[in-house]
Image 1 (tube, rainbow, N blue to C red):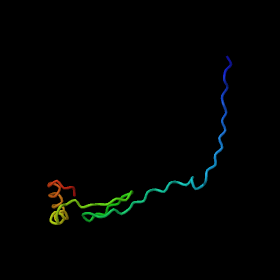
Image 2: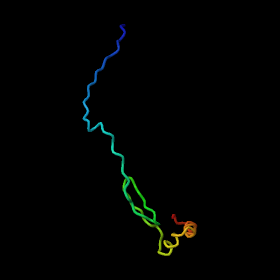
Image 3: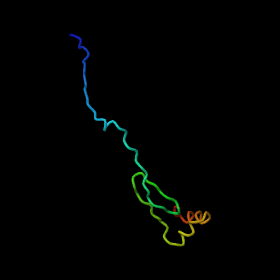
Image 4: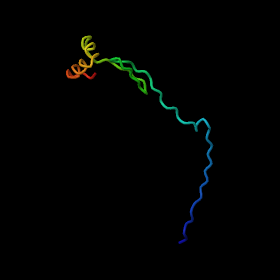
Length: 76
């Protein structure tokens, strides 16, 4: 049996300069604000305030109130 030789491959490709540019990094989009903090998202989105009433929203504005609201089981 004869030994097989190594094969040779030649590839020619053409690429547009437009395709060579780096992909644009996703920009952050404004998603809303809750508790005085702005929330930014890379894919859009929105922020909802999950506190059930006005009293809890007012209570969550202070540092002591936030801990009290967290102890009630709400994520502030």
